[in-house]
Image (cartoon, rainbow over all chains, first blue to last red; front, side, top):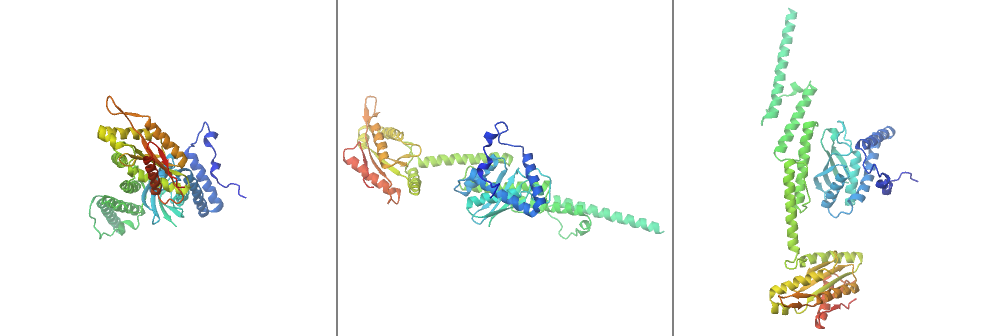
Length: 169
Length: 308
């Protein structure tokens, strides 16, 4: 018996529940929540397992996002266009496509002003694991096949934009 | 004596080191400013024992390689290294790659692409995309609109019928087609001339068009023939709609000149999709037969296809 299984209604009616504070929160607090959660996860289960958890959680969020804001789409162009718009509207980031060869299962895209990492201090590792899962889920939902996403450039590693290589498995 | 030797040695070492540093700086300047660089240069002397010099040297090599590639239009070049200047160049490279992709999308007919990251170029690109979008919309409108009546033409009709028929089959919902034909139209042209004939076509199309929903199509089918296609509407209901439409026409007087008004009537044939229909042409054929029946049995009436 699961206690915390995610379903879309769990997000609740935010407008109803927050008539004064409304739908947005300060990004600083979102990052605090994410990074403190990752800190504790790493302490409890190790770095590798913490990354896997973040990736899978990102996938779950990607599934939700696709169902709520992307679906239905009938072409690659519409998929990319709707995803760009939804990500911008939700202030998650500015998505740009460098290469989109869905037929051969290879996409390279960048996310500017990324929710998770833009402005972070320089680190020795790419940090957007949650985004990786999120992006993989978007492509998975669109194509009906399994995709994986890997961040190859990140703000944290000195790039000004996050670049992801998305490939069909 | 020995002290003097030591001092001379230190002095010689200092001089050598100073010479080496000067050469290193000269080489860095060459890398930054010259087209050609000596390839046989031994850099180990400068770099092996100086990690910062090595870092600086590698950074400048990456900058040189990336800027050379960008200058030549090679957007796929990847170089190692991070930090402010390289990151800015990589961001520019990413933007140019995205712009390339966007240009391909525009070439494929997606005129909704907009650029928001390249200053004045963005304005120029967006203006171009907007103009292409508007021109394309105008061309599509011209290609799918009847010039006289300004209602959809046969091309638009065919596109609509194809999609609506497919949907009707997939969802097993009714789909009906009406063909209207103006009665004795040749006589109007012969009596009053083609200008008045055109005026009649425009007026009749306006009256009939007003009887359909936004998700139906009402189009010019031929000279004095019009066709309406009604997704989700059964044959019986379609018959009622057609009857109401032709009744409205028969009550309208169209001015032919200052003294004279013309009364016009219209006949119509109605049919709906049946299970054995393979294409929308099957429905059109039955509607056409029904129209023929209306024409040959007195006109100003609607006939319905009897096939179930």
